[in-house]
Length: 565
Image (cartoon, rainbow, N blue to C red):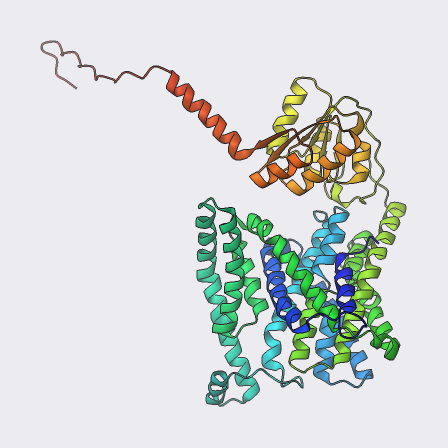
């Protein structure tokens, strides 16, 4: 159905939940697994947190995100007041409606190659500010629960400490919580920033990929557990800071890749568990409230975001992209609702309304982006080459029209990084017919300036593969390190042209086996290539005559009557 997979996870949870007929899953076990999902989701957010990206767009992202959160929260509070809820329930409910899904937004931007564009950077910076606000909310909600009409989690030692302060239970609880958070943050920023990258570095040098993967996960789960047990900080905040300090390491990208499968798996279980909490009867019992929630998410906060971006004198296309990006809610909304329900701040119907609003907004968000693509094509046609420096190629719609290649019996080079650049130079030097497939806008501009036929996009895009004439190609050269993307294009190339020669690179033995199974004939495994070259050099040294030892020459005697100087 071309919809984000989050919608599928939520609907799957509804199907196996206790409020629908048929099979009912174990809700207690689902919630326990969902807790791991929250930890790993927040760990992933921390791994990709970039203060540099935020500072680059801070002028519009910081005030814009705060203004939009405040507006959406007020709209949610107005709806809660109309339904007769408490002020605390209205605040939590409004905050849940104010924050967009990182997963849905990034997926939409990546599909359109907007991540590196100006509007993509603003949208991501905006989302980072929202994430920071939500992290602070998750930290402050438990100590403020009683003030918001809920029940604060009781810790006997904390309560004795609070009573000893003599400043009242609420202020005392806030003071104790703030002290614990400051202690935790200090420990993470001072010790963690040194210790975690050091651990990753030494684990990587063990040469064991499994040990590296387990170490990254153990650090995430261990810091989250330690933050909760020792400092009373939420699992979510502990995991977020685990990812943030791990991001200081040069190996953070590798850690992100290695932990992605497990993060994805438990994120699925988290969204499914949220779907299990949804009671579909809320649509029949509160249709007006469901419609109001949907309008707040899709129309209300998007309109506010559009006006804010336009107020900063950004083009209409940028404002519309930000509005479309924020016209949904996701993981933080669910985390906040689950925590609010545990603390008895919000009624059950509030949780059902948020889940209903999330499902509907995620379903509709894809169509909003399709409409935005059509509007941009109609009102902002693709510029002529060369591209202006302020509008990268990643801002073009993903389904733009490009003339197919006229080459036949040619070489198709996928990827123009360090390896691809050397291959391109060799093909050019020998006068062989070839074209390049590359998704980095700056590389595409560089290749176009050199007169190299280049197609912008990911190697696995079917529309792109139809334009590079794989059926008539002699050889496919995959110079990208991502085995999954390489496997996708190899599989499609072999399906359209079984006779095509495939040469690929791989970074692990698993990748070698995977690509060979898809039909790659020649695979260059980095470790093997390095070892072969080193063996050749060693044998070349061994074949040369051994060098003769050097004997120091005796300096000639100075002539008589001449003093040495």
